[in-house]
Image 1 (cartoon, rainbow, N blue to C red):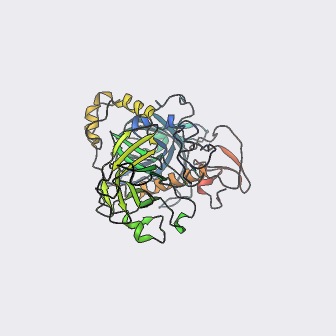
Image 2: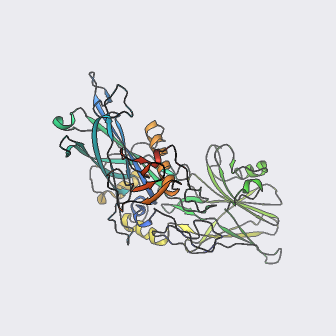
Image 3: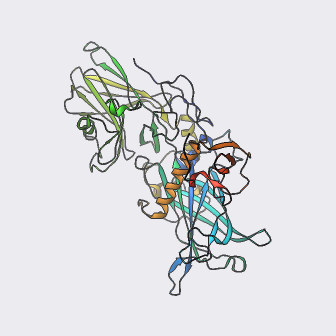
Length: 496
């Protein structure tokens, strides 16, 4: 039996139906949370789900060096940001996300972290997307006073720059600011803060096929930077025909779908090379790993990760792969002989996406034609072009992009971008794990989570509405409410 993927995708508040999840199911499956119209795609060149700001505060030591603050300890605070409640849900031209956090500082002992007895502060953040490499972040900090009013401490505006991690290497994108000199109100907030730094982690939206209804299940896709945009492709259908029309019967097969427990039956057709071995692993490991080295560009060094879709029918095997968001590469073989790399020609970009490759050196001179879905859709691509104009000749060169579009930026004082370096500092790594944890819990509610008790969050704590909880009475899935149990911090969390 052959299953041909439908050519329709609905990209509004119901996420992607049919294409994105359980492609063999005739019924639409609605996902929650994500809305393409508030994903920043028009401004950042690709869509995002939400993000986490890390806000660092520094004071000056006696010798002038910068060290962590005492009144605001620990000196690192997190603010979850996402789509504001009043955004225009009829248009993708939304460029602003907001968030709020109300942590308590720790002044109980020298090293801080977790005992309180300090200030109750409120941090309100707003981020405005400008370009794929540049975002403006504004943060206002205030302190809760004895009369239960908030006194302003400080407001800053920072430009955060992309550190350039590709989609094929990470489900997150990272931004950092320079160290920014500033002052906090001396009378109400101590006045010790002299410098701040802003770091931002954005959760990327990954378009593709999943083996379950679970929205956080790994997606199978290919990602390629073509025409200035990071494009993602669903699991593809392949049609194989002989060039002479008579050598063999045309065949159709599905690529890029992993059924449950496919690794035990050697039937996984969506694979990832993680730099060391193929995932998911199966008993035919030697054969699987040959797919990682068919002769495509950038297969070496072997540490380069790869997204792979595989298919076979009759005497032919075929792989499609992308490496470091490079061009899609195709390889084919006959009767398990060595792989031959071909040249792909795109016949149609969207609705549906079609590309073709011919292999005259293989018996039967087969022609492989691939069908599927490409994201961004034409609508989103036109939106991106409307914001920035046609993409520059060097899409990976963020500095060239800024020079071409400097007149459209809100702030004319654009500093040179820092070099692209991986986010290896503990703060960004910890923020990334927090984003991942919150995302999973929002999309896989706890078995103890009950009905919602409010329509909008009343705590000003990052956006989690209050729910009933069969274990703790009341709880919030996200945020930083110090008075209620938070699912993303809860040891009793167990997904439904």
